[in-house]
Length: 91
Image (tube, rainbow, N blue to C red; front, side, top):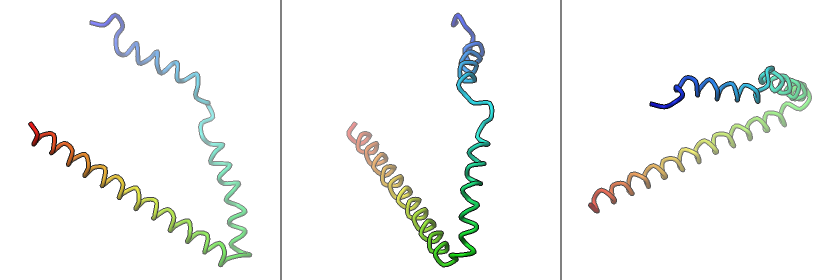
């Protein structure tokens, strides 16, 4: 049996982390994003085709990144399965 209980260790760890976390949270990040979004919204009125092209490019890049991520994860999973099968069959 350990000298300190699990809950005591967990409370000590959380108390240590609490000292390093800001109390205001991430609200300032949301505010900054909102501030940066306002010029983009206004630019839609003056440059609608350019903004539409930019949004389309961002969408295509996002989808491409997700597809590449899916392909890499699938190939890594297959490699692990094949490796484990070869290890089992070698026994």
